[in-house]
Length: 112
Image (cartoon, rainbow, N blue to C red):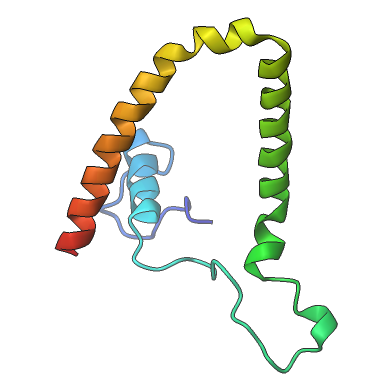
């Protein structure tokens, strides 16, 4: 629906790349969400129906997948320590990036 052309004559043809890019940019740079990101809490609903729409209900599957993935990587590295030694260079990069990101976030949070 958001890729449908508007009736104005100044718009490029609907199949043109420019039209698609313009519509994608319009969608990405919106000031408000098309639909609510999280449902608003309704205290009048019964206790058993309050799970749906909560942050936990929306994120538990993603969190469980990450826990399973982390456990699998941990077990793999415990079983094959030679893989761990090949990742030593990643530690230095990670340390440098953490310092840069922390500085950047601290600076911008203080400026806001």
